[in-house]
Length: 441
Image 1 (cartoon, rainbow, N blue to C red):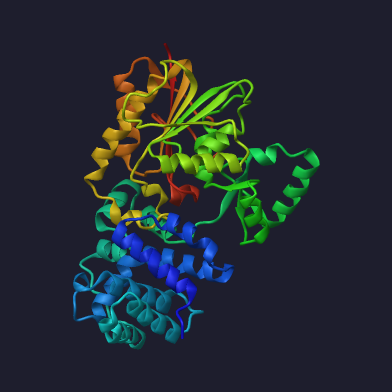
Image 2 (image 1 turned 45 degrees about the vertical axis):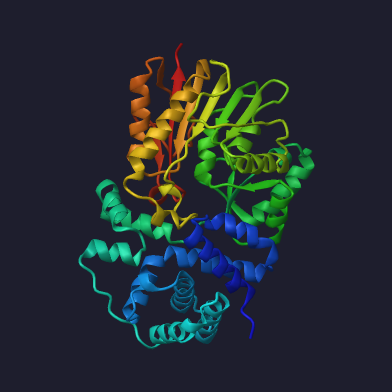
């Protein structure tokens, strides 16, 4: 029998994540159109579920294998992880289907000699559940929830054991589909807006955190079509809070550095009058600029201008030329592990000081473009203090022409000493840090 299209696509994606360090979200989007709705759903479930449970799956596989997993070909290991994930977590998948397709995937990848090995390991996992021995409670928590021990220990030190358990559990759940309306929707006449809003109200509930954000209660073809036509845009409610915190006015000249894919750019653009203000969106590569342009055009934000640049270098803008500047800085992304599960396996402790230095450099460059009386917003999707409060405080210490500015925030949030943090376990959204600075002179 042929291998199911969903498992074939899932295998190819997981292999690219493992071998080429590609992002699962981008790869899933690239393969979406070649799969029907049912296969697309199973592909997403297998890819994201296998990544979310990878450390635990490896521990179980290791207990059934006489050969260390490190000695296995990547293609064999990926087929085993996929198979075991289906056996342990997807009750609706028959055991024989999970095993058979995993064996066939290894053969398809040119590993015919591993056919019996894959079959034997997975059938052994069906017959018996071995006892996994753990050194201590933290190792057990780290392995069962598939997060590196150093990250678990770090979060326990910051959030406490109970909140860390909640955070790890959040990271291993499929995130809700959250969306907002777009500038293209805003341009419809009132009756058409009311009609669409009535349909949406039956398919989604309003967010308690971000004004104008909705959570889909189920997958629906209407929402898919509304997204494709540019009337809605899927954006995490925490990301929308960042964009809204800028308090953009119609006549503002706004600069958005590190802007791709354009989630915040396009939300900011909804509030700007193109006859009075402007929005300039920047990023480092041609590909990222292309994604920015596509998102802006789809959402009716044609007036946004684009500049390719390296924000760590001198910016090609005159000093004091923008009313609002957003630095949504590159970061470790530890606040978005639920959406991007592979991040947990890639980030290293030594990345934190390197990332903080990059973030401070970008913030310093951006600060020169802000007008006196204007606002500079710094944000990350990281949970780590080195990238958040520490960067904000060092920036203020180096620049006496700036002071902390209170952010426009939902009522459930409050401004802190140097910024505000959204955490998954507390706010049921991706983790973000936001700091606002007002230029005095």
